[in-house]
Length: 439
Image 1 (cartoon, one colour):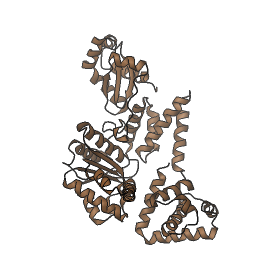
Image 2: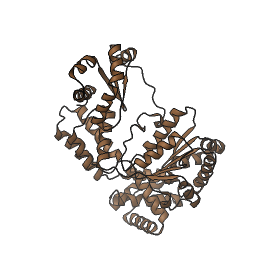
Image 3: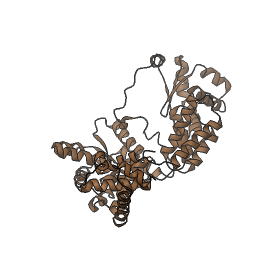
Image 4: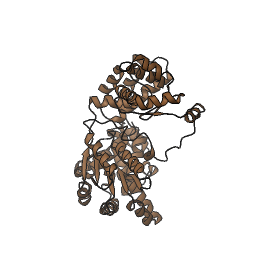
């Protein structure tokens, strides 16, 4: 049941429950289902009269059937004769989005709403409709994989549709720091400030990563003030509210709380079911209710995992002839086991520690002894032991064959520092979150 033809057959079956069979045979006999593009069903009819009739009289019926199947709203579009011929000939190559902000994947229409995220969704819609007029800044917080980035992409897309000339700037918190450092090195501070302070809409993802970085916070403070005072919209996301960022300057914390703070929570069962159906629709296939409920009841942490499960099922169906429940169960069990048993490699841990501290991997694996390198090395050893579950002697091999005692001392020191320094404990949480993104 994974083709557009299967979906069309399901629609016709539902249409027969509300329309006469004569109506179906008269008006739908020449309709050709072409594709699903996001939340749009594309159809073709070679008979102009029938196409116009179905479009005018029955589009709402078709859309209602689709909502029954996938639990999300759809629109119906008919191809012209020229478009259909181009489709049969391979179609014209679509312009590839130059960034995720231009992607059709992350739209308000594709966002599945439930009690866990409805306030955040409503606030995002209000901001997109009138940037700078409501909830400035809009601060969305919650754990990874719950749809925060989807919402800010949707805001950007809506603003772009309303105002094609709007200057929209998207950046991650750690990238803002890296760009600032590069601008200082290249003596391009003026260009850096112009990029951010002239934005009509500034979107910063994972703003928690600027906490504890004095120069970055100072730069962002002035950028924030410039945009806010000129009534230009600021949207921020984070894994926690500002008051829980112990290394965030008080002046920034207060500004982040000026507008509206909304959280997103893990989706409840009904929303998880709707998310699964929606993702299957985007991929162009249908899952049976048993499989949907199995996924929804067993994968509860976040949206990203749910969508990953649907993609894996689709991949199995594409590769294997057997689409029985056994193959579906195996796919889901395998994915669930990977999520529960995920253990990051030392390479991943070292790479993320180095990225956070802007340290060279060769330096921390080697003999360099400056303070930043030593701190990075000790933290990497600590995390490899704690979440990588690697034996001390093998940890030593990752760092130039250091002996058991040296590794043990480094780990004990780091445990002591973390217990005494809440700022360092927060840094460890941030780095661990980044490591877990590699699941």
